[in-house]
Amino acid sequence: MTSFEVDSNGFRSGFVALIGRPNVGKSTLLNKLVGKKVSIVSPVAQTTRNRLRAIITTSYSQLVMVDTPGIHKPHHLLGERLVQMARSAIGEVDMALLLLEGSCSPGKGDEFIVQLLKNKNIPVLVALNKWDLVKQDCFNNREEEYRNLIGNSDWPIYRCSAFTGEGCRSLLEALGQKLPEGPLLYPHEMICDQPQKILLAELIREQVLIKTREEVPHSVAVSIERIEEIDSSKNTKGSKVNVAILATILVERKSQKGILIGRGGTMLKAIGQGARLQMQSLLDGKIYLELFVKVVPNWRSNASRLKELGYESD
Image (cartoon, rainbow, N blue to C red; front, side, top):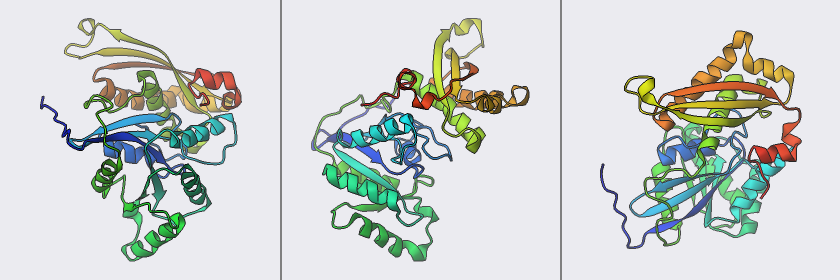
């Protein structure tokens, strides 16, 4: 294992809130910057629910990236709490990375977030994501649209693509240079501070979102009921750590339960297989995953149920 050395002369560290509308690619960008999967990704908007902190350490800086739920107009108590999570994060960090969808012109939602950041009066760096989808002859006009959006603010603008990685290295360097001088806040090998149960639950929810798309969009939550390590000497030969996981998928209607289970249990089996593959890379061992589906009417508007699931108000 190679040793890690920090340049203590001018080393910078701090917290960076990743802010933007739903589905602009915040989680995809975070995974790209970290170099490993720490946040779930799906084609469905409003995927992120938990305020995850990912840690990126270089020889000259340590960024603690706070991935926040997309800021949107909420339609239930869960939505209100997710937006509150994102808004409160802005007041708890050293700077913000505003991620905008460079592949299209700015909209009302972008204007709202820009004004929100201006009111907080913290350093902001702007990233125009999905730049690989912008035609070259539109580059200057599109960037000008976003410069007009931020007005007279001295926020630097960077072009990037979380999908291809284009511009991500320059973005990471710029973020590190803007942080205040300070020591390591976390061990250099640490890349995420999220509890294991939440990470595992999110990997299951990701598979639900990917495999059901619009059929069961946001009325799904996952609760990890039990995690047990199994003596590998009694199981698969040569396996590292065998882990048994029992999880419950919550939905709001019986029809949604039927969709998740599928004919003959095919959908639930597919969700479990997809989640197991992701979990095996995370836990570095063989996973035994058992899934159940439970109907809990209107759980997204139930304060006590949201607390049980970890969606507490700040």
